[in-house]
Length: 414
Picture 1: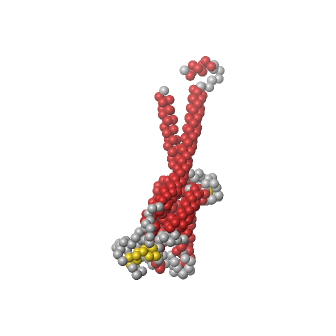
Picture 2: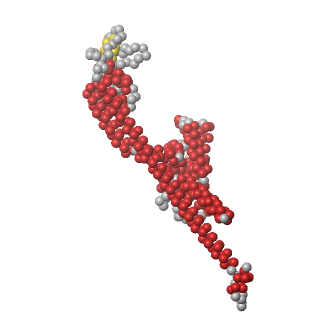
Picture 3: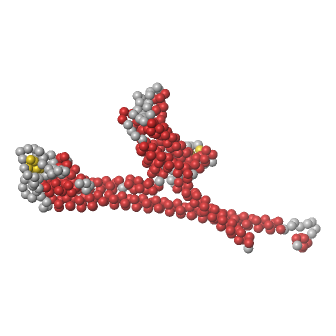
């Protein structure tokens, strides 16, 4: 009984060990973006190659991913501290940052090289360049190396190239602008950011349909405003006999009306006359279709739409223009533009569900693999116990002596 209990305890212990190993394998699979290991890498490196095994171990090492993320953060800080100057001028801080850029480039190059060796480059379904985020990383690294190569060629040819980038040879300053893409590498290292960005990309087609709807509404309201408010915004109060605009201190000029229920000139010695450029330096008006669309778009964004409403009220009265603007805000801002948030929210929910499904599938695969390993282990234990019992049984039987009987052999055993 004690032997059976010890055997059961050892089996349970070994099953827990298998479970722990399977969890470690799942974590490694998630850390590498789900990339399985191909049989060959770069057409020559097999899974048993020591160099490739070392590369796989480094890439699947959790601190390695943390080091890369910290390097990306440091690169973002360096890009934020860098101060561009005109005429390729520089200072000590910029010069130091330009030298630090080489360190970042070396780290990113080593990372890309290790992943290419570990997972292959291109010629199998789950290679390094088959992942769109890895393509972004590879382009950034390639442009950086290409820039350094051009600077080296210019230096060998005797062309002076300042640290800022522009010299008498090929202008590498434009290539250095690609450094601003490096913060995007955070997306490839943080799965939650990938979900958000994927949802935005998937929402582009629905957002295009909403953009067409917004454009249609702007055109409709621009045509209505063109018919109702054309040439109504170019009258204001002038001092009598002059072309000097009259306004109260600290207030901007506003339209007025010669008759009706519009604004009247309240300052003594002033009169309402035409010829004014219009409110907002002549930008806000409905005199032509283009500026009418611009004014409607300003109202839809709710940026100063009340000022536009007050100017129209000053020009023609406040009896009915509010209907036009209130309906524009309700339909344009509160309904149509909020459809953008609805589409993004829907796509984000879909991408999150996909991510959850992938996680559930990986857990199911882990559980199935664990059950298969445990079943194989138990079968091996059972087979080993049977073989051990057979061996003990064979060792317990002694061979018969010549001339002896079976009974005598049994007596000798006893």
